[in-house]
Image 1: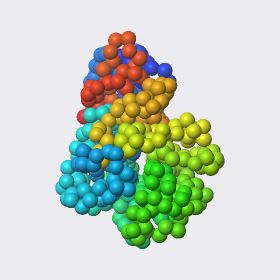
Image 2: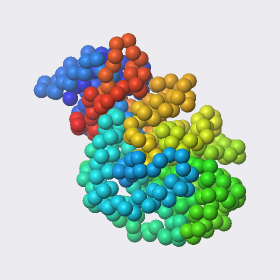
Image 3: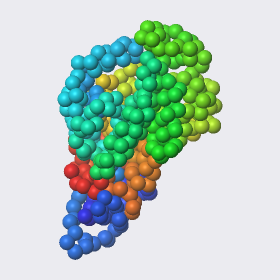
Image 4: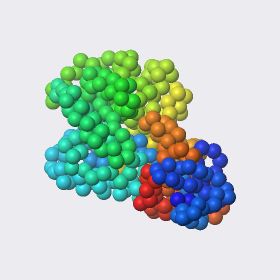
Length: 399
């Protein structure tokens, strides 16, 4: 297949005008001006459009797609968790599966071809159809009440994905957060990341209540978790981030989600051990968090990608809306750099640098196109685009 857009954003160099992109199988094989169709080759004309790599959502909870509008903003984080848990008890497997299907469509409508999804309900896996986009499934791990996650369960999940070679994407683990996952679960995630060459992800330093719990040993989250039986001996001894870093449990395989409340001594530790950070701007605004420390994290050597989080704290699953929110907070960050936060940077974070998030020979053919108004910066055109992509391809298959 030969694609002929007006502009190609390779994210691997300057924009290319009137260059064609050849796709063979599930790979990009050639890019250049003057490429002619091969005998019998399908040609897709994309006049007045900008072609770019499919967008990558670095953090999402598709399980919660059906929760949209169920929880009003403005409540405390611990109260939000309680309401999430109450809603979960009212949902059936069929409800969750319908939500996941709807969530995938919402992602695609925004130009997303890859998602890092947290899966909290492993019983859903055998009931799922092949996902329509490239999906990294991160199995959520929680042992807040000494409910150990067995090696047998992990082996079963790995066997499940081994048997589904046609599912594009991968598998990982997600110790939920320092307040719900033990040091042992973090060790397991790190070990699997190293041995099986897969990423893992965790929520960390997300809320003021989490900060109060770990720094001072009191507050709403402390009281809530103590009341349901959590061992609180790790509280009042410094930040959760420093705790995990000093144990050596967060490494280059880890996607650290949120990172909203960072202590000065945390930054010194991050300089020695920079992390992959995922920021969710609209979720951040929903909870009215303090300003996200983007500059400080970048100065410490961390890269930063973007995610949507879930519809329990958002009303869309569109990365363009996340970029728009981020640019309100950081207007000096260019549209090009923002697009890197949903292409090249998350591709690197999940170990797919050069394979996803770029248009180059040998890269996977995950591609989208949007309209290009006349005399518009093509990066801005993508960021400001409304509606569905005009062209959408995952793994060489047009959808």
